[in-house]
Length: 186
View 1 (cartoon, rainbow, N blue to C red):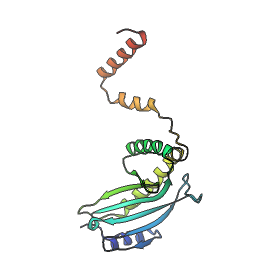
View 2: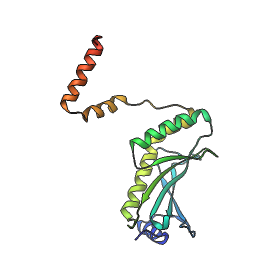
View 3: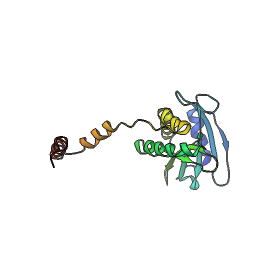
View 4: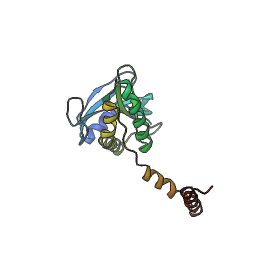
């Protein structure tokens, strides 16, 4: 029992969100706008549009934030790709998509339902998470897209996280190895 276009409209009605819909034979899409705290769209408004796309006979719902950024400067694309991969790795909910034809950058969540129905709580949770991630990532993504600048990476917290996964013997071996290297012992 997948989710139909009409069921998705009914969920959004139940939530109380205003939206516009474009049904089609293959599923169609619905779009709505949401306020942001940090992110500003191309017009300078604190606002992001979310498309809800019904695909694969309702077995897959895509949440798409189109026209999030635009990056046509080939020197800045490399920085964007690096930031996008890192941000997608840090928060596994969504990924960034890049259109090489016009430089459009969008954020996407693929929500596979298979034989389940989408719930109101799932829709709310995914949209809130998307908007939060857009705000959280805005400074780093915008710096990459507009200036080709990469964020300072917090290697210390990455290293602490990796060390915390080690058992005590492995941690001791690492400390001994670090001490040897600092003293120039081979």
